[in-house]
Image (cartoon, rainbow, N blue to C red):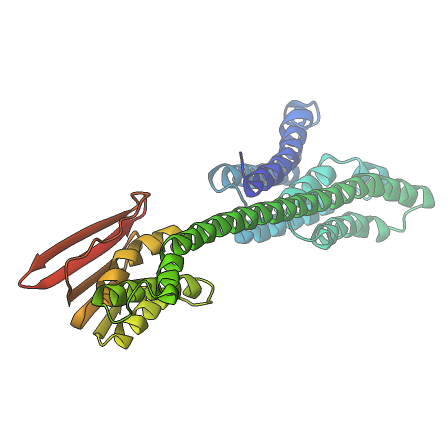
Length: 363
């Protein structure tokens, strides 16, 4: 499914292309006959026609290559449009009806809407107002008749008024697209939060089920007197279960590095049993799913809480993988494995020293 951002960008780009298409069709379609008409263009008109065509071609190239028009080009293009309006207005006779119907009036406005698309409508209003003033001043300076002023006002109002209405509509369209994207983003965020909450709840239920299977029988055996707390094996089982519970409780804490935070609970249990632990952490913390953290720390936990003497733990964070390693004196024990296969466990024993590493790599 396409993202809301993609849809919004496509919608906005389509609206801008439509405005540019209107300007290009007006210039090179309906106004192209001016180049081959019986009444030749004046040099000023021809220069203005070419300048406006260059502005349109540059806008089309920018939209094709960059999908947007740079601010510097929009500002420079507006300056060119105003210069063309001033030059063409000065070249035209001071007749209101002639000016209001001149081909340049509407064309300058359409290119202005293209350049100012995406900005507040007041900028388009300022540009269109300036164009209207430039076309009106020469008429007013010649003491026009009431009819001439009326013809000019009606012409300017119909052309520039329509274009300003289009600018308002484009602004509303962009606002609707932004609100639609915001709504879609909120809905997606809600879905993500619901899925995350469901996954966390399922993971906690699984972890609590593991505790019920291992911890509760151990506590029941101690309470009934079936297990002797002085037995080294029983003490080892208690240490393992205590570390597992500390990890489970640590999952609810807010920490910048959840992996190291949960590991700290395990180290605390190990140190209570006389193990001196030295921890080294390298790299920036990486966000990990709960099941991955459990897979990384499960074997490390049992190795630490059953160790004798000193232990050295190293945590390595990398952008695409995480490793946790421990070196310690430890008796032989059955290390838990990650059932999902996402975490790799490597262990070796040499000279009475256990070296154990758990690692996870992003797919």
